[in-house]
Length: 154
Length: 320
Image 1 (cartoon, chains in turn orange, purple):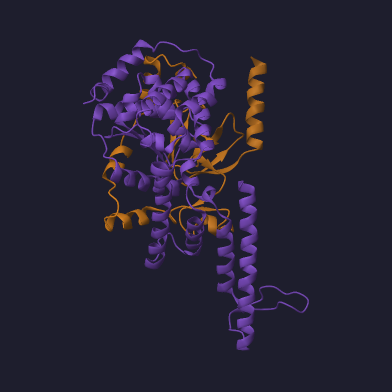
Image 2 (cartoon, rainbow over the protein chains, first blue to last red):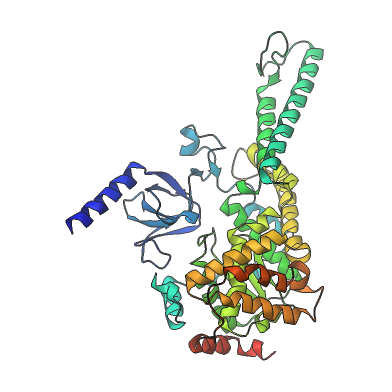
């Protein structure tokens, strides 16, 4: 038991030693209690939010959010580049160049989509409808279990 | 041509362009005699190049040179999301969505359950799935995770495992960003130059018009690849191989991939030159390429999975 506790502490210390700031690069990041997409959600983090990340394990980073909550985020939800929500924000002020900063909200964005909508070039009705299909982790767990799919046991 | 070589050529091109512009800037300054008030020293060598371009000009040149080096890999997940939405909207101009809530709910349950096990479970806006009202045997993956499956493709599958194989293949196109790779480099260079020049998140009218033009072109490149020209043979095989792994991680028998391809091969024999047959390598050659990877033997479908598959998709399977 003691050895196990020591091993966990050692792993945590190693993680902290290599920890670094990362940015959330998805619209709604879910920090999970376990390194699994089916793990319970302990916190939600918005696009551009900064988290302190430890050493990744099998594609999952142990993270601490700005308000001190801890859990796991998948690497696909994180970027090593700071994300500045617009120019002139803290990231720009701290001296990070635009090459080091992913500038959210610039380029191919809502403004471009709005222009295409207003010009009647594209109809987004069904895009919005299909984007509204939501399936939560409980439904996925049930679907896997009822279908005898062992992936749900991970 | 491999990517490293492409990047090298881009860098060399950027350097040549930069030097050429510097030279033009130099000769024009010299001919005017006095430099403008905001002239800066761009570079100084022995007795050659001296002062000479305005700060704005230097910034502009450097921005342009950096933009040349940027590729689809520099698109942020947010930009990918907006491209994917427009790609899906454009596909809806060619294929009518199928408004069947129960069937679409089942497809989303299946697809999102699979996406959890992909190498890229998180995208900016998440994975979402929709059926298309078309007899064509086809499926499309728009960048960012909007995945469309035709009624004809569903009817080509005899059980949930085979439909899972189709969906897994499309998820893997999103994971590998194959759609973004279809965008012509010139459009991205233009777009990145405009983005770098913008001083705020909101583009001015002129920049917005230029960005929208490049955006439409980029979306057009992706749609053309999805609906007409198809991904490369290597990209299809990469998505097939990743889909086998994905099925296995979720717990589906990986043989479903072979079963699906064999069934498709039979059905497509009557539809050469249409839909999926037009944009994918032959199903038989894909199955042959995968055979060595497959671990699970052919098996009868799980009765509970078969039951929910039939219940959710019954009208479609019955051809209604």
